[in-house]
Length: 255
Image (cartoon, rainbow, N blue to C red; front, side, top):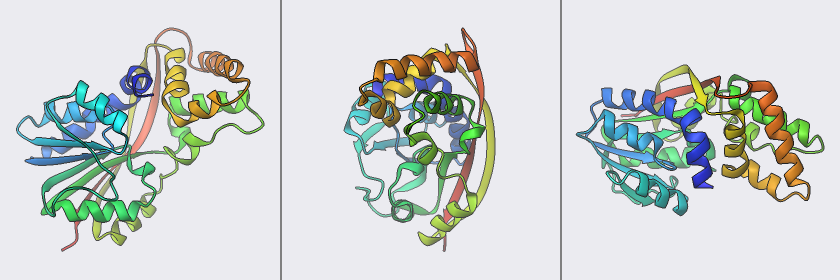
């Protein structure tokens, strides 16, 4: 899964936003940075390039992702860690960052409480979440193709998880419950470029839980072929582009 995720999804979906988030992080001039849900290190590499003087600790819940990320970006310090039980001392970081990871936390206020604990008094929490599914050209094309190929119950992973935390008011309430105050919330739309629609389909079908659900079906080969064909019909052949919208949040500790 990490290999497919890195090969097919990171360049088109995650690297454009990593550059944007890293620039925002560097503007805060942090010395000690903690990254949550780092995956294979797209944001990690961008952070190290944008803020070379900062020390970066990159974490992920998944051991396999930590292994893949540490091999790709060895200049960060990597640790397996649950965002809801961080293995770090109080006040140890100037900045906590998380790109498209908060949607996966089972108990977001609990995770945000841990963020508050490890932040220094003037520290910041910088993170992003995807907008509604319809605002993401690649994800929407995949989900539509999947629902057409599996009309009797297509996996809802993209709808319910990556695109299931889109309300800034809910985000603000979760932060407040953890002792953090939302400072800014900015909608950002960027263009993603993929080598082909088939590449994006392969990323979702081999690098996400939606693909794992498809693989468990008896008709998995037919579903995979149908999804790839339908995505190509929508997005075109050869290199393809799509707009993608996310919200970038900045929060601070309440005094």
